[in-house]
Length: 368
Image (cartoon, rainbow, N blue to C red; front, side):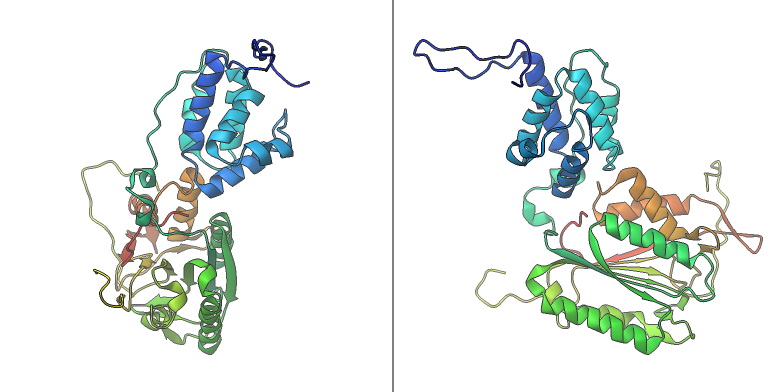
């Protein structure tokens, strides 16, 4: 018979069994566990349960399914399973390290291994402070991505593909890959991708298109040097041509030069850092809910390392690995830009600086 000493129930005067009395320390532990679990997204909560199955002593699958579906239920189950607090601390650290949610670790790592549980307030993730669910896009539908990369004559491009595939996988995207296409092949495949979205209109939550190649302002180049208009590709996914994505986020990641200009930067005094009322049918603008990220300013070159890949792609994966999906996409790329801007680069023995450029017509927040 399972149970912990000192928490059994007792019989009432009518012979019924009263609910077991929970020790104050266990109640406090349960409250603190729920504080942490409430900060996890639905996807993170599912991952938490999956990782929990591998931690010893293991929680039974049946208990997880019956009692651990909600943050409150899971907190109650964990408090009973891993009481006293020292055991719960060890389990929480093990699981949170796998998510990754490094921002939640300090409150558990700093707790005394055998001391009392002291509740502490955690700063809420930014979307938890938003008033109402309407301010967030609903990404419960399928997340579809189209990833194109020209590897020919682009050393390091293979690494970009690996990093992007891993990032898309962690963000729960279904990925369509297009490697070294010519112009007609790209247009054919991306049109087919777009038409596929329209065929499953009600099931789509989000679309992401990543294009990685040589380029110039307004164009991306194919393996044979032929140019494809970026504006033409953006237009393929607008609210007229892709009704499946109306009021849904359309994210474009462009890893390509936008010209030949180079920014050598300027010296500073700072130490260098390491590298409608309803009366009419509602209408939408033709171009809305777009988010486009470029690796450099207009008319400027983008940077790619032959060994580690493109500067922007590498910084994206570094930031995601460190912070997970705790930020809205614009905040995420702001952090990426901070990392890129404050790194020192050289091109042909000359100093060069880059800064990402974001363009947005989003109407809500995007959290992966």
